[in-house]
Length: 77
Image: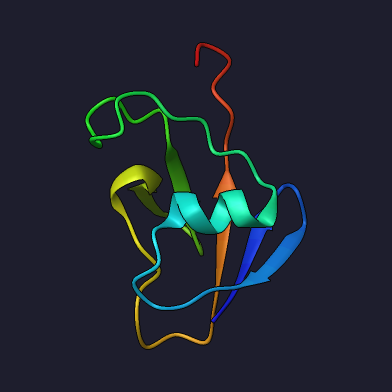
């Protein structure tokens, strides 16, 4: 699957089930993290449009050929 990271404009190939934080790291994209358990929402990203998830507890979904991940930076993290 092709994953396109915004606003960095980086595209990388990833396998279904691969943790999103690992994919981002491999792509050289920084997703801010906090608790690494999904409760603080520091790593919240937008998948495609209007679908928000915590990257620390999410993996590349199966059954898609491409996906866009929009990273918002919260200055408090």
